[in-house]
Amino acid sequence: MILILFSTIFLLPVLSGLGKIIEKFFGILFQGISGKILSGIMGVSLVWTAVSFFIPLNIYMEIPTVLLGLLYFFKEKVYQEFYRFSKKDILLIAFISAIILFTGASYPYILDHFGYYVPSIKWLTEFGLVKGISNLDLTLGQMSVWHIFQAGFSNFSDPFLRINSILLIIYSIYSIERKNWIHLCFLPVLLLFAQSPSPDLPVIIFSLIILNEMISGNKNISLLFAFSAFVFAIKPTMIWLPLLVFLSNIFIHKSNFKRLLLGSAILFLFLIKNIWTFGYPIFPVAIGDFGFSWKPNPEVLKTSSQYAILKTYDMQYSYEEIQKFSTWEHIKNWFFLKGIKSKINILFIVSLCTVSIFAWVKKKKLITLICVSLLIKSAFVLAFSAQYRFFIDVFFVIFFVLFHEYWNKRNSIVTFSVLSLFFISLLSFPGLIQQYIPSFQLGNFMVGFKKEQLYQPSVYEYHQFDTFKVGNLKFNVSKNYPYNFETPLPAISASFIFDDAKAGIFPQPINKNDISKGFIWKTMTSEEKKEAAATINIIEKIHK
Image (cartoon, rainbow, N blue to C red; front, side):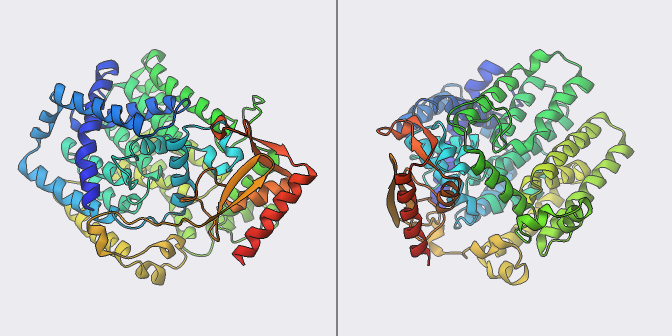
């Protein structure tokens, strides 16, 4: 807890100083210290994305970035922005920050933390963006821009990977600085994302901020579109946000398309990044085939697509059963899944209907465009993989649109306090979730409060692994554990080894002496098939 506080106190000046530099080149997103910090986050994330094609995001990249941010923080007297807060505001920020720091120090429990977030950050800090990394482990083909941001500050500024906790504090500063109190009501729910560098948290927060700025009359379309493109680059399921700004530029502001150039450049960088790591422009969809040699094997992509369909139905049906569903059965079975997922799905459709009716009654252009953008995004999600984690942001947006005019400071603080107590109780005593909501599977991975968390954030350590070799690739696999968050690189998850072997292929380094040059897949020779079979045999024996 104390160490996260130190990271926060250190990084806020760094980010606001970097944001001041961005403002000098591209203008002001909105006034205040939170505007500078957000500009700094976007700016450094995009610069590091471009840099990571060539060099790793190690300490030699972090030190000059930190020094540059601190230099401009003091040179441009950015610290004076903090003086604008009243004593009551400072006390409120301190109160909220204490709650965030307490919950953020808990053990990570989101499974993607171990199978996707930490491995991505390890590759970025040790090698940068690696061409065809999805051939080694398909999940790594995503390489979210948020993990690039986290990786750059993970060497000494935030070694415990708690950048999301720091972002929640920044979000509270924004709410108080802009006097938009409804944002405080969202904070307790978002505490569930404070322990891991999950990209879900930044896209929810940034989308609510962009939405608030648009409703409040911010007409800086150039930066609003650029920031919305940045959000999309973090997580492509946020397609509705750049679409909203684009539509508002056409139908409300009626300005020329020059204002969209900066955002378009960000989108272009995002596509290039995906092509480099995945072989296609949008992960995990095999659309836009340019014939790159490092694109994933079609059979592996097919297996991934089938798994996504299984996840849509919460693994409650086999793939063969789902294929036999009629159109009506697809809908009915999705609505009536066993457990909490069914309630979330029903609430999702009810929410979309509610905001549609609200937009029709209000007859305001911006509200209508928000509704249209959300419906388009929802149609894409429902068509590809209707998992609740892909549309969770919609709940926050719809609640904000419906109720942002009715929440004052007092009600918001009371709501924040009550809900925070509730969610702190869940995180501190996870047995409550396990007992009363057994279908919420993540509850089974939560660990209660430990007194050591008052000093430093809790982290898991697991250094057991085996080393294997297939063809020219020597790799490591976590022993008797499905994820490789602590396994030395290059590491492959056991599930992908099975998928590759089933497809008759296996990843190989482009340069056998330098894995930083990337990976391709190759059809296995008879000798390599024996090596793969021996590897699988050992893994299966260990798991038994």
